[in-house]
Amino acid sequence: MKNLLTMLTAGVATTALLAGAAQADTLRLLTWGGYAPENVIEKFEAETGHTVEVTMSNNEEMIAKLRATGGGGFDLAQPSQDRIAGPQAEFGIYKPIDMSQIKTELFVASMLDATKTNSTVGGDVYAVPHIWGTSGLIVNTAQADMVKDYTDLCDPALEGKVSYRLKRPTLIGFAFAMGLDPFAAYGDEAAYTDIMQQVEAKLVECKPVVKTYWSGGDELLNLVRSGEVTAAMAWDTGGWKLNSDNADINFVAPASGALGWIDTFALPAKGQSDQAAYDWINFVMQPEVAAMITESAGNFTASKGADEFASDEMKAQYQGSFPPEAVDNIKWYPPVPAGLEVIEGGILDRVKVAQ
Image (cartoon, rainbow, N blue to C red; front, side, top):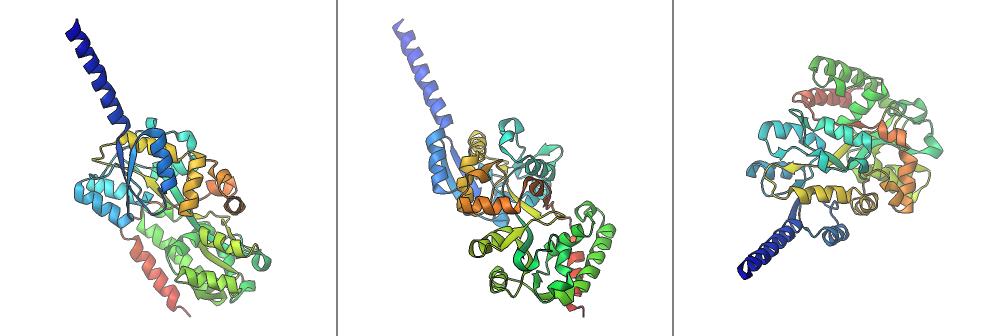
């Protein structure tokens, strides 16, 4: 009897130790700067018993690290959604997401659906959304309140007061504003070329209105601050930064849809702490926690209702730019098929030199 009790006691103790070890898994997180701030990590560790090790990276480095190890070395990674399907199909560096482990009710439904669609390979979903941002319009409404969509940047009334980049987002944005769907033509080079040629003609027509094609973010912000430019195509956080100094200036989601990117959560193929990874995803998608990450990263997350917990200024700027219907109308960038960048490059070169 004494030996039996000793064995039972030892068994209970061993079980408790194993349970404690499982609860205290270390999450090795491969992410971007600002996406895992210390106050969030401390809160997560205190509430779950897990520990977190953060490695800062970017898309190129993330893919390179995971390729080099066959998807090992990390338990959760945060590549952009257009870096999921291609690398997975070619290198097999991720494992499927078990959606039963994800609290989907925490997510903005349109963002979750878009990311699932763009990260599905062989019928399996490989990512869910986290941080997002867009490009659209920055408008001084006191001087250019007629600008509601990308093609409004061609209005002759704005001559010499407009700026945008000669880059891919401009081609895509103008296409949507012209009633075309470039993303739907991604699988057909002839159809995509036709769309881009129509955009080329529009951009050449618009050249007399353009003050300059901006190339650096600071350059654009200074042009808008000074009043030299009153309407531009640019990114949301730039518009909100200007709004902090001048209430007449803000980011405007275009009528045809802002162009959106999403950094995701993806599970590396050889990750060893899946439960800790799922716990982190569900933890940081809580609206109150998501607002803490927004404060750190400067961008909003796919957490539903998190804007209500942001600072008063950020909440007002976000809600002024993105009513719910504008969020649902965002055109999310899918992976770019090979060959399209060559087509776009030729279009941009011809626009640049056109008289």
